[in-house]
Every structure is written in structure tokens, then in C-alpha cells.
Image (cartoon, rainbow, N blue to C red; front, side):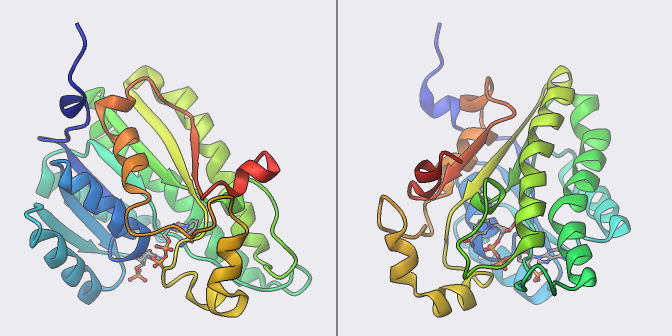
Length: 263
Ligand SMILES: NC(=O)c1ccc[n+]([C@@H]2O[C@H](COP(=O)([O-])OP(=O)(O)OC[C@H]3O[C@@H](n4cnc5c(N)ncnc54)[C@H](OP(=O)(O)O)[C@@H]3O)[C@@H](O)[C@H]2O)c1
């Protein structure tokens, strides 16, 4: 007997913690999971932005709470998970989305900036995943972890983009996803990653202004940048029962850019 697709893709009764959920791609993913029925807890550093994002989701009828914290600080990450457990009762879905970049030529890239990028983009994914798995997913034998990687983790950049720490961190996210999927399948936890191409956001604003949004779009077979809808389907697939047989996978949502290089 098969299950109707509406039922497979419903997140009624589920709970989700989304890091970096106050804007950009994290907020888009939170909106998708919330529209499918999940209760949402957003986290990022700035309380005012979180309040605004939560109000935006609540206006759509999504049960949304928030906790302000610096994801790159392990004690803060532990506190977010403890608060999420208290306020949601359990964490079914973890979206490891908070991330940052740094632009500098490799030969002069500051070491502090390297550490900052690594601590947020990869070390914090380990800290959050471990804390959520121990608090909720392993005891309940159920979990969905969605890591936000990047096509920058699948290869190098054109010469005008110099983000060595960022590319390295996102490459690590790709293999972290596979390795964790291998370990935690036995606990009923799936671990997958979305690798976005270029989406307009605060992170890419400067780059798109310098390089030209039209020029960046022209690199993609679909001749477009990502928009406010483009991650919703991939996130829901990995979060829902429709994706229950999928783990350790990296899905590029990039207008086809990575298809050109086989990344
Ligand atoms: N936009 C793209 O084209 C693109 C492409 C590929 C991958 N990505 C990835 O997608 C993710 C989201 O990027 P975005 O474009 O949406 O960027 P964004 O608009 O800059 O949003 C980043 C989010 O992360 C939060 N954040 C940043 N530093 C944090 C920290 N130390 N602790 C907790 N939260 C922190 C920000 O809030 P606060 O500043 O208030 O903390 C914000 O909510 C990142 O992992 C990025 O690498 C983006």
C-alpha cells in the first residue's frame, strides 16, 4: 500500500530548529517547513531580526519561536538546543544553515578570518548535530539533519572570487554530511545537504553588485539566480517522509551551474 504524496510531504506534528533562520536562505527553508506544518525555532545572533522573521512566519500561521545565540560558540549552541528541547519538547529536524564568508586572496587571507569561517561553517555543524542527536534524535530514533553546503564546496571559483576558507569549509560540509549519514543511519537519522548556487542575500549582495547579477545568472544553464522559492522543495524533500530513503546526499540547487563541471 502506498502513501498519498500529500501525507508523505506533510510535517504536521514535527518540530524544526533552523540556525541562521532570521533572513536569507535559512528563513526561506524555515518558511517551507512551517508551511508544511512543522513548528519552528529560529536562531541567529540578532534578536531584532529574529523577532521580525518570527512575526513574518507567524503572520502566515506558522508556530514560530526564536533564540538569539552565536552558533560559532559551542556553549551558545548547547544553550539553543537546551532551549529548543524545553520549548518544542523534541527536535525532529535540524537545519544547519548559519554560515559566513570572507573574501581575500589566499596568499593574504587572515588566519583569524579562516578560523571564524571554519568555526561557524563547519565546527558549529558538528556541535549542533551532536547536541541535537544526543538530546532528541538518538533517544527517539528519528531525525532529519539538513546541512546547507554550497556549490563552492564542490569545486573552485572563477579567479575573481577569492574565498579559500569558505570553499574549504563547504567542502568539509559535503563530506561531513556523508560521514554522519553513514554513522547515524542506524539511529533512524537521515543527513543530507543542499548545495545552493547564487541566491541574492545579504551574504552575496556585495559580490553580485561587483560581478553583476546578470553576468552571474548567465553562467547558469537556466540563466537565472535562485529566488525566494527555489530551496523550498529540496528542504521539504529531505525533511519529510517523502525523503525517508535518502541519506548522505548532496543536492545542488544552482540553476545547473555544477552540471557544467560535473561537481
Ligand atoms: N546566498 C547564496 O548565494 C548562498 C549560496 C550557497 C550557500 N549559501 C549558504 O546559505 C547559508 C545562508 O546564507 P545566506 O545567503 O542566507 O546569508 P545571510 O543572508 O547573510 O544569512 C546568514 C544567516 O546566518 C546568521 N548568522 C551569521 N553568523 C552567525 C553566527 N555566528 N551565529 C548564528 N547565526 C549567524 C545571520 O544572522 P545574524 O547575522 O543575526 O547572526 C543570518 O540569519 C550559509 O551557510 C551560506 O554559506 C548561500
